[in-house]
Image (cartoon, rainbow, N blue to C red; front, side, top):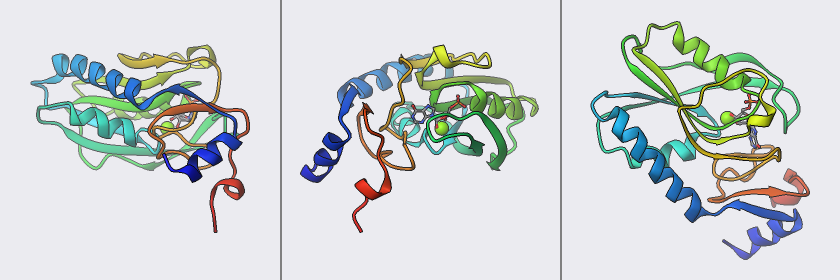
Amino acid sequence: MSKQKLKILESLDYKILYTEKQIQKRVKEIAKEISNDYANKNPYVVGVLRGAFMFLGDLIRHLDFPLTTDFMAISSYGSSTKSTGVVRLIKDLDDNVEGRHVLVVEDIVDSGHTISYITDIIRTRRVASLKLVSFLDRPNRREVPVEISYKGFDIPDKFVLGYGMDYSQLFRNTPFIFTCKHLPSEENVVKR
Ligand code: IMP
Ligand code: MG
């Protein structure tokens, strides 16, 4: 990590929750589970933008069989650290998924609204199967029930950043997952 980035993180009073090594180890383990279940199914792997892009990239590198990758994006409302509901679909799947084994990839499931909205849409399309893999789960904040078939870690009720996850679009490119006492703002992070 650059001195400059470390300085910024220190100013936020950050604390690492999962190191890059711990993350990569867990991703490999999840990939192994998924490989056992999907190796002959040519799954349609759907990442939920934007947060899931990094986990999806790492995960599918370990899946050594044919698969399709696509993305969905929705806009949600609520404060920056709490999504309270879903407004609309911004990006839909590019292909017809009828008869396909769909695996949705998320960074984190919190209230469950985002993933329920997405899976409800996919479920109407007569897919062969539909399962969810989420790197993180914060179960004590759940508002709607969600079934997570493959999961990285359960986390406590604290906002996290890094490994694809952001606050105000910042820190998605950090390879570890961390919490911080002071949330970042563009002013104190982006140099102009
Ligand atoms: P939910 O709809 O409340 O389940 O929230 C899920 C979405 O909110 C995820 O797709 C994340 O993008 C985002 N999110 C939830 N918790 C966090 C967090 O701690 N850090 C960053 N993003 C989060
Ligand atoms: Mg997300």
